[in-house]
Length: 189
Image (cartoon, rainbow, N blue to C red):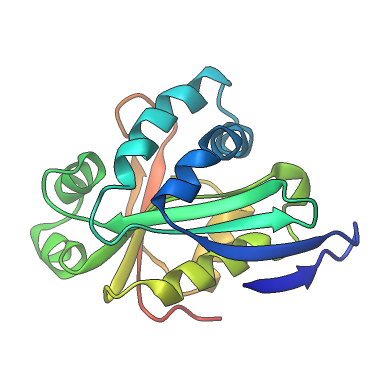
């Protein structure tokens, strides 16, 4: 567990490792952060929660949670070993060249979600979640997709070593273009 003080609020935030049961127990809180951070309607959190419940059973599941000193969940990140037959893996395989797919999708951890409550952006919580999560995985690479625009998250990923694998990719069910990114582990701190 890592503790650090928030620069502006003075609130202590600690990063904890959670197993699947701990994550599912706080899933509603996590999906509320997800919808806020992604600027999705609230009902999408319930839809995403159905998938997230299934993700905890995937091989290599790992989760980190950012908790305020009062126990409130203020951020989270999780993922698992990506494999053929998984929704994201199969879509991304089609978005990449054959060579990139073979070079990146084998032995990779899919960062499914990484979100921090929007009013706490810019305070290092996302970076801490990302670095601690990446340090816990055994795969040689980490992959993710993020809205394809200049955001704090997009800059964080580039800053920690992610490169663009595909840009302007449209996932079913979302009209916004996404960037698919990959990084060899360990990440840049």
